[in-house]
Image (cartoon, rainbow, N blue to C red; front, side):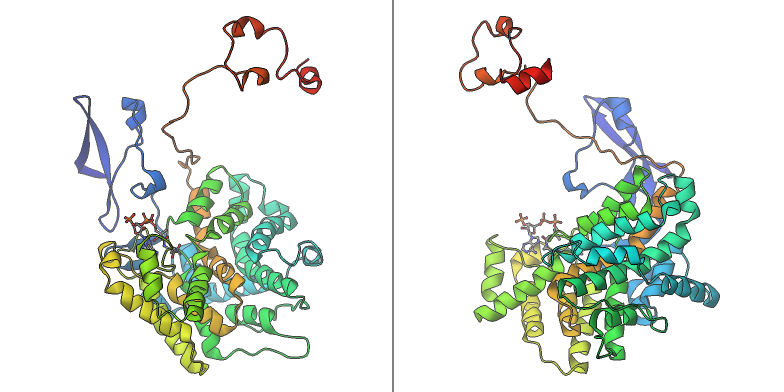
Length: 460
Ligand code: ACO
């Protein structure tokens, strides 16, 4: 809090002072938490574009300058030097691990890779083949907690006591559930994880190995997947993370909270955008358009340029910059000439020289190039958002912990400005289509509800 700085709100000629909270990078927020009790007024900020819901020490974003830092370390530095699992440790525990901590953490993640055999039944007729893997993922992340009842007590102290185990377990099992969901949907036999493989390599093994053909991914393919996961590992108070924090604020356990995060991530304006980007690029390619027509449609408001725009970034999303280079590298390695990369680059150039996009600060976001890499890896399009969910797991876990371990934490419960009908009376069914008779009040006591026997007896 800043002692020297205060915000003044003048309401009906009367002054109210609100404290100013200053973040470690100098961001400033007006603390309005006492405004209603002091004045009767609330603040209105639909979509929370201007509202800080909490103070957090996990991730810092400066959308104007294009900075993204996990626990203070720039994303470019982590992308260059770290791995997904090391970054997950950093996000969850706040520090880069020592050699010993890293080894223990990796071992713990590895030991938890298998699913309880009871859970395998879900993949044997428990879901229709048409089920979307995000629906399966959300359902099974919540279900997995049922096999560890001591971790899902919904009592903070007890759930926190088992936090280290629960965190490693979720990080590991989210990947196994994702791979199993893919195999079930495609009628493929289940492939179990291996003890001698790293995190991303194990995932690719579970996805693509066949009983008669072991899949050995090229090192650079494994690295590219690991990089995608690392770049998605956290992004402060986005829609799914806010959802996780909201669920956690009620005292719900980690498993239930991240399961809700998966549902929030699914939507096309959030994690679902990565599959929409690829569908858009394919549609442009099939129609023979070079991107110009699509850009014009987006400008007329008939569609959106998927993978463009961001609530926070008003310049390049630093993750998109890294992924653009990675996409070029991956396609070179596997000697694939993907016309979709050319279209994506052309779209970016067109949009960046068009005043509609320039004036609104619409730049490529993380989803714009990730789909091209995932496609090159052989990932089916309906698994794209699932990949985002696997990547985002460390962030959800860290945010759950931040909420659960805050002794001053409050349940998330926003206010609203009610704009509906003023108080009015219940009207009986027989009066609803015509005018209400003047003796309505007297008649009101003669019969029940709509007069049907079912309703009458229910009331009796
Ligand atoms: N294409 C065309 N126009 C756009 C786009 C886009 N992708 N994004 C925003 N605009 C326009 C809007 O029409 C609006 O124009 P107007 O001022 O003339 O009405 C203006 O830019 C502001 O848009 P909002 O929707 O108010 O911006 P907001 O911050 O609420 O939305 C969002 C951000 C949802 C990401 C938006 O840019 C979008 O829909 N992008 C496409 C979907 C996408 O890529 N989502 C992934 C986001 S990253 C992530 O979740 C991982």
